[in-house]
Amino acid sequence: MRSHTEVTGERAPAGGGIELGDIPAAKALGWLDQMLLIREFESAAGPLALSGAIPGGMHAAIGQEAVAVGVASVLGADDVAAAPHRSHHIALAKGMDPRLMMAELFGKATGCAGGRGGHMHLADFSVGFFGSNGIVGGGAGLALGAALAQSYRGEQRVAAGFFGDGGANTGRVWEFVNLAAAWRLPLLLVCENNGYAVETRIGDAMAGESIAGRAAGFGLPAVQVDGQDVAAVHRAADDAVRRARSGGGPTFLETLTYRHLGHDVGERGQYRTTEEVAWWERNRDPIERLRTTLRSHGDLDDDAYEGAVQRARTRVADAVAEAQSAPLPDPATVTDGVTAVALKVRTGS
Ligand SMILES: Cc1ncc(C[n+]2csc(CCOP(=O)(O)OP(=O)(O)O)c2C)c(N)n1
Ligand SMILES: [Mg+2]
Image (cartoon, rainbow, N blue to C red; front, side, top):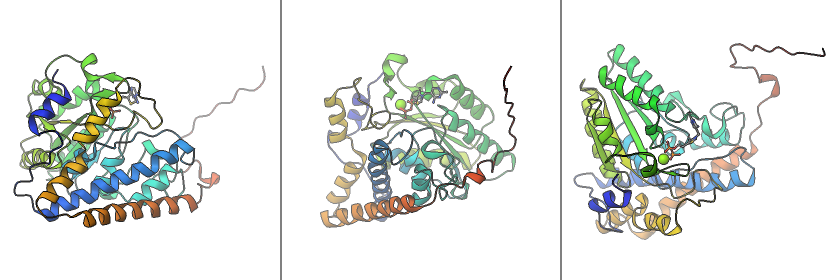
């Protein structure tokens, strides 16, 4: 198993920027805005979950923003994305309104699921986001279904199913990969290999060179890409989407990434060293790397960057304020959306 450090280390010097090539500055600045919105959203939501203002736990994707933004950069509003439990970045990159998401996190009636789902059940079909999913690897199956429907109808649309390295150690994900390849579906199978499944280091649970190498055995193009480089993810996803739209079938993208925070917010993180986390924060932060590049090209000075941070922060603060003042769902609506309830109550002897 090649380590994250080795692989990304080959592609970029420590602390370096990224290669934008012929990508216009306006496009890259748009990616920066999206990544900042994700980071600010999660930086605000995490402490609110820890304080109990947001009920339930929370999985943050801080550090993994470039994967979602790079893949979403080649998806249109009609294309579909489906996510696992760690999904805020994918939902926002796919175009979900942070206000709908934040209200859902708070369990409020104005949330995207009417406050019934919370953090792990975000969805908005109007922007092609088919949901977060509490089943490890489950989102990839929904994306497979969407890709099958799109292919059956003869549409040009594509679907992207995201899952983690832990998901890539479950049988269901390989059933999806197998069917996608066998049926040549217009699907991107996006593995966010952040090196850990809860507290299990990938190298302790998997042999072989790479997850992409394993995928190649299923008979589809499979590539490994630096997930901390938004332009590299964009280029790999662009190739995959072009192939999918022209009937060339699915692609497996293994993105090497890293979560800066714990598996869930508040986790103590005793399975990895503070040095390791600091290395990734210092050398492979996807936002800092893009910022470094834009700055060196003369496309972003410090004031402009601070302005972008403030804009993202304001949008998130507005979303939080709106969610806090929104009503809870009316208890009288508790069975709305429930197709059937089978309830048998045993009383006495
Ligand atoms: C089918 C199933 N098994 C176990 C779990 C418990 N669980 C939640 S997240 C997780 C680890 C997932 O790791 P990975 O796929 O690498 O995603 P990451 O958390 O790193 O983003 C596990 C085992 C679950 N939600 N669903
Ligand atoms: Mg993982």
